[in-house]
Length: 139
Image 1 (spheres, one colour):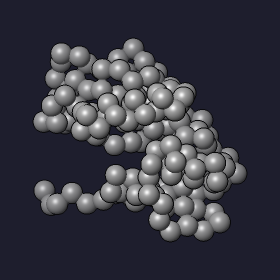
Image 2 (cartoon, rainbow, N blue to C red):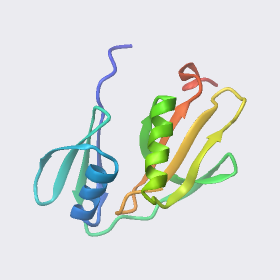
Image 3 (cartoon, rainbow, N blue to C red):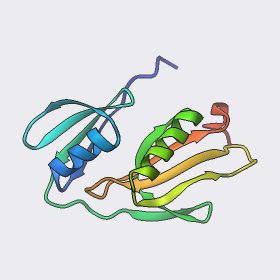
């Protein structure tokens, strides 16, 4: 496999300014280029873009580990200690979680810390960390 490259992800947002402040101030992402209808962010080294649209559809859900996981969703697999720090920061900032931070598949292959929440435009995000990174793609 070749060297891991940054991905590019663009998502729709209803309120460009409110969502821009969320990603810049709450999430702490560095802002890049922008216009009056889109904004680039450095999303853990990846190019993430929010685009102003008139409507954002609500996500469907899929059951995982007894929880209703929103689909679609996106996020990053963090180091365990970075996940803990982000969970603490978001909990302290009064984020309304879809699924509060918890440990999924505890004691099993693929044990992971996970949390789900939405940005101000309704896009679902998941941030997770694996107890053992070798289990990320384990069957």
